[in-house]
Image (tube, rainbow, N blue to C red):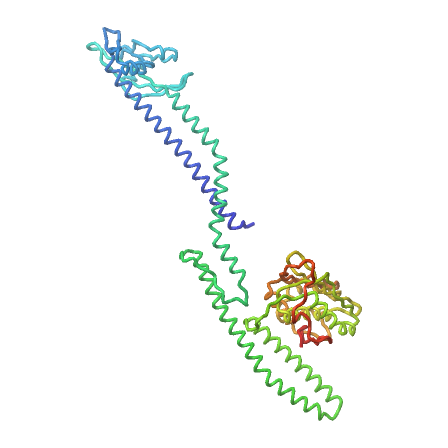
Length: 495
């Protein structure tokens, strides 16, 4: 399973932060241990060299020569002589051992004395009271006599400091990882925010807004490269779609004239047809020409709509009254097909829209429902106000659609399987026009359909705020100018 980019960036950043924190902890611990060890060596050297200057020998007896009135000397000598001992470097005999060193049991054999006298490097020992670092140095005594002087400093304070620092690192490890994870998640969000904004702008671009372009930040980075590449693709696509629209518009215009001429010739031939069979053939040809003409009109309408050449006049429209009026006018059509047609609404539902195009939207949906509903079926147009939206449902008990067909219901020229044929078979443009009308009114349309169980087309549009205590009156154009049955063209569009 591939994780989302934000999660991958956060995990990678957290891992890097964790490794850096671990490395920093190890390095800082090592540096602190080295610094403290160097300080101990420096102090041990100072104590050893300083004690050389205070030691005097009276025969085999060592003595400390200092000024008892000098507090600095007294303090220094007390520290230097806390852990120290003297050995005769020739015989290996212990000459003196301080009271602080005696309980630790550090007594050297003669051969060890000779070994330590030959080398001056300090060494560490572990005791019940902590570690000690012992220095080795040779100090001259009486003529011909040499002594091994060992001076020690306690490393217990250093060890305690390092232990506390290690405990602190371990204590902060988990909170540090948590903060690293939170920071990584936040940084990944900040890093991907420009990409999310580009994606949001790209989602708003469709075939009717190909002139729009993604914004660039001027940073000349990878995001700007993506935006520029997408803009170049949009430019090529806009050019191609524009050429296709021009071609379809020009083709439709060019076909109108020969179709009109051909229809006129067939009508003349129909008047002079000697037999009924010839008249039926000519009448059938006229019907096919009319169907082709309506197809061309639909193509021109869609081409003009997608090119932005059809302006919409927005004003408050009472959708409930508009729906009731259309149902009244289509009632004769439904009765002729033995279909029950009714309108349901709970009062005025106002939207800001173009009354003429909203009328066409409802006519196309109602005609589509009547077309695919068999005798004895039912078609219901309902209008309701839900929150801040106007909801329009067109439900039928017709033959329905498969899930695949429902997914292509609003595609241009899409035809379902042959079982969904009807006497007034369309050309697959009516629902495409419905989708365009809904989009221009900033609404949504969905279809819920099942084979043999009918279909439900649901349109939601932004509703105007309802006025309490009064009934909203429809504006001019909210009802049809005539009260007769509406004459429907191909795919449910008004003829």
